[in-house]
Image (cartoon, each protein chain N blue to C red):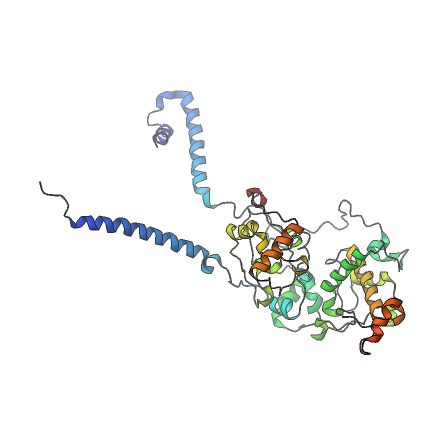
Length: 218
Length: 224
């Protein structure tokens, strides 16, 4: 009896099996890469704001402390967005004719909130508290990037859970002295030195490597 | 699948017509069951990312001003926040600006005062209090130096009052600095005034030699 399939179909079968696996693997890899790419995570994407506020100018060039505007960052889960009064503290006297600042003046005059667009927004099922991170020696720039060099503000982190866990698993890689938390130009020591400093600070600040689900999902 | 098929058949009465009164009940229950199943299936992406709650400063169209955070009714006093201590919250005693601090100032208070001063005051008043801060360099009206006689003689309560209510071009800092911290800043301003007005006599006798043996350019009064 003649064979149903010609010998060459053996090759076809092998090629299709391995080719299929390759394509599947390639697809998985591509998906993974896309999920981590700024195109998908919207990292580095500047948001439209009512006023083109520059952190580079205010925090970088003028050297205004983060807490001057984000007043509640040390004692609350929310870092705090400045009320228009904070802007007007200086801008009642400086750049008073600037058309760029008209929304700020209008907000102050008419008692209408400025509708800023959130740059770092977590999903609602994540609990995050700024104050505890600040008091345990995690610097602003560790998560927010070099804000003092951002002309327009963008998000630096992916805000993925793996991104959070990176640090929760190995805080010694990221922790800095409390005195440097608000220093926007802080440069961590390199490699081994950071690990040595980090281990010391983890002990000193009693930093826990919290990885329970209910640490953040509560 | 078989179970689902059975349910659907029953709901649409394909074989259940003989079940009578009990059948109607079961049918109602099945409709609820199926409805729930459908809801859970289609509800998947209406997920917990966006929960029906207001995060801080979230906008809303429920209230006329678009704010989800409400102003308390005028005159509201939160529990434990009745401000009866005149000195602590106004800087005055019996209506007169006081030179007394409402609590004893320790070293920790001074250090906290320095930290708060460096955050909120240095942009204009600069690190020594002479009024040449970065914002002044950029065109803000120059505030008086803390080291003029009028402010050296001013009672501590005066600085508290200015921080609380603002003064001249300076806005109120009451929303940014808590009352106790305003007092600590006032204490630190006193320290700054001392630092800029020190004489050789203020240096402990044992340390004086170190200052005089250095070059004349480094006077006892200069800091930073």
